[in-house]
Image (cartoon, rainbow, N blue to C red; front, side):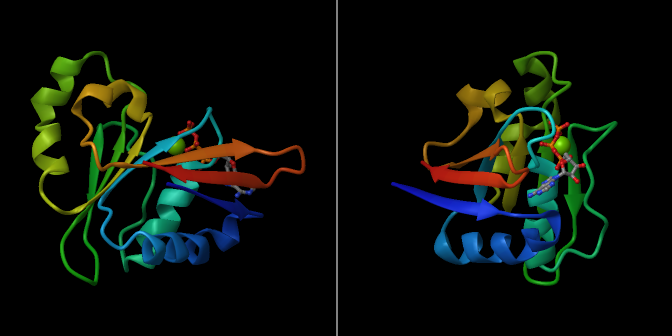
Length: 140
Ligand SMILES: Nc1ncnc2c1ncn2[C@@H]1O[C@H](COP(=O)(O)OP(=O)(O)OP(=O)(O)O)[C@@H](O)[C@H]1O
Ligand SMILES: [Mg+2]
């Protein structure tokens, strides 16, 4: 399974995010891959907007995980594993409990939790094209 999208600018992120959520209605765990500055946080802000999150979504600077409240249903979890030191640290925050909770989970730098991701996680790859737009490829 794979699907491709194009994101021209940041402003279109919520609209594209809504489209992706509708295309993958059963998916709850999203692993966002892409180099520094590829647009992972920006797309996650889009997902949050599409899910009716009121809190300002930002990169979890001091924490590995941020929890947001949404209009519809339960919480939304945003992980940034960039500063993760080792897998024990994941265990320390109860990573798998978040993942198994059934809530939406969006994960930046998911490579660092490869062993802990569920088999049905949706992988989202972001690439910066020469014109500055982002190519987004989804695969399981
Ligand atoms: N689709 C887009 N089109 C144009 N610019 C974008 C797009 N998405 C993000 N940007 C810009 O790219 C920069 C980096 O975006 P963002 O913080 O979302 O990247 P990131 O992948 O989360 O980076 P990091 O690896 O540091 O967490 C920001 O200045 C943002 O405005
Ligand atoms: Mg980021």
